[in-house]
Structure formats: C-alpha cells, structure tokens
Length: 406
Image 1 (cartoon, rainbow, N blue to C red):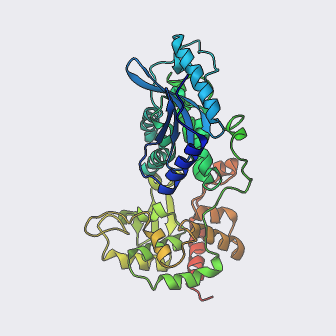
Image 2 (tube, rainbow, N blue to C red; image 1 turned 60 degrees about the horizontal axis):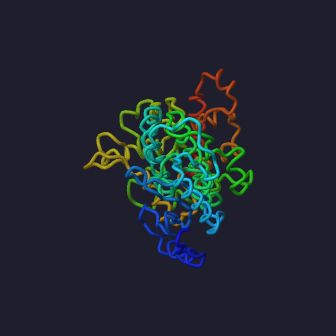
Image 3 (cartoon, rainbow, N blue to C red; image 1 turned 90 degrees about the vertical axis):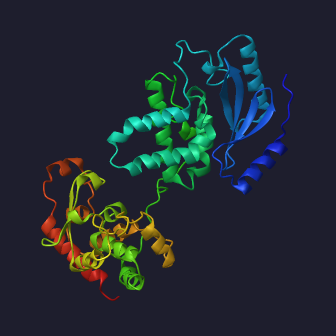
C-alpha cells in the first residue's frame, strides 16, 4: 500500500493559501500523497485527483475525479486499483475511470488536450470571421482549461475535470462558462473524430454535465449594461467635456448605433463624404454582410474633426503609427467619467429602446440600423431591402434626441 502523506486539513490549508496568493503561474500546484497519487490545484482553488506514472519513459496520468466530491479516501482506493492494474500489465491509458473495462479498439498515439486544442484552432481559424474570435478561444482555454488538464493526455480527461474547470465560473461568469464548455466539447469531438480518444464526450451538457453543475435560471444570461435613453443627452454633454480621440470615437459610435470593432476599425476609404455614408465591408461585420450607415450632420462633423490628427488609414487612429484605436479605449473612458457600471456595447441597447418606445419606425428598420439579422429566417430570406432611406431619417431623429436638453 502507498505511504500516505496528505490529510484533509493539509489539503484545505493549501487550497486556501493558493486562493489568497492568487498565483499567476499557469501551472497547477501538485500535492503528493505517495506512490503516484497527486492532488492538482489551480490558481482559483479548484482541485482534482491524478494518478501519475511512467510508461516507456514518458510521464502519463489518469484523472480520478474532482476534490472534495472524490474524497481523499476514495482517491486512495482508486489509485490502489490502478497500481494493481499496472502490476497485472494492463494499459492504464484505457482507464477513463479505474472501474471501466479496457476498450476493445486501441486509441492512436495519445496527445495532450493542449495539443488537440491548438490543432483544432489552426483547422477552424480560416472559417472564423476575424482574429479576435481565435484569440477568445485561446485566451479562455489558457485561463481556465489548461491549468487543470491542458498537459494531460486527451484520453485521461473525464467529466469530473471539466466540472473542476467550469464550476468556479458557472454562476458568476455564465456567458464565459457556457462558451468555454462548448469549446471544450468541440475539441473533444475533434479528438474523437481523429482517433485520439474514444467514448462519450465528457463536456457534453445534455444528460451529463447538466446533472453535475448547478441549474441556471432562464434569465441568467447577462446582457450588456446600458444607459437609460432619458439619461443620454446629459451623458453626451458630460462626454464633450473630455479631451482626446476616444471621446470622439464614442460619440460617433453612439450616433451611428455601431459596435466597438466597427468603429475602431473604420477606414477612411469606407467614408463617402458626398453621400454622407459609411460603408462597412462584410469582412468586418458580425453577420458577414456589408452594412451602409447613414451619417448624421454631427457624425460628419466628428469625421472632419479627427481628419486633421488621425493616420492615413484609420479614422480613429494614431498619426505616427497608423494603428487603430484600442478596443478598450472607450471602455476606459467610461470608467474615467464615472460610468463603470455601463458598457460601450450597451449604447446599442440604449438606441434600440429609444427607437422602440419613442418612435414609430417599423421593427425591420430599427433592426437594420443595428445590422441585426431578423429572428424569422423565412422573413429574412425574402427581405431584399436594407431600408437605407428610412434609416437616414431614423438616425437624423436619433441625433436630434442625443443633442437635445432633457
């Protein structure tokens, strides 16, 4: 039998220490109990059991479940089962769980989860609209998944480990957690299709993780915090007291009801001053369709104002480096102005609430102003107009409201 070193008291103390110190290292802390049994603890304090061993000169491991759901005593019993299996000459890579029988068909050369994730991202990247999407995949996996099982063989990952990753953020960062779960599930599917693993997907929600994670309320999805439209005119008055290109970019974004990426990536060759129109190419649009934006009088004034000190390419850019404004510049401006409780994207909601409650413009016109796809796919298939002329009037009325005094 193994020579045991851990106690629940020592484990809890170590977890608390890691949470308080908030370690920045992406590697997990490992607590050894003896003869291959380890507790892996990430920087958020989430922990899971591993049985580690050497096979033909390579370090390998088998997941035994999350702590404390899998108790110290149970982990020791499971580890002993694996030691006995090794003594009988069994291949531990086939043990998704120690009690599971050896699979009939062997899995091809094992790869780590990180290897599979990186390979999938390379494969999928050409089909993604922009580099930001790939960066979101990479960042979320690196922050949450890799510290727990990034360097483990893809064959060793079980639903308990996925729960260890998701549970700390499942309630407080629901949007991030649900997207992360979907990404892990996709990577596991890719690994199965390419012969790197077998069996059910441990990140599947229906029938599996739904029974291991807390239930989410139907209204749990959090929307971008927005400013009530009746407060917008006074906000813009406060905004104009600030200096710099960020405040001009934010005002332009509000007047055009645009997204952050559309504004910071705006180029001078997209602007037609004669027609007072900004045409955003499909490559930069979320829906993948080119979008014409009517420019109100104030929006045109802002463009003339920044023309003198922006670069040759980007409207809201840096003269010396000819680079676009940072994606975070407008968010930081909101914080400086004391509006840390709202988001830049939320101004689109402000516009939509105003248009729906204070105007009689048709639903389709208001949605087209936001470059939204219609919820009814059949109706969208028959819709051929972008209602540009009506949107000219809509954004002119929006400018009049924004510049009014309330």
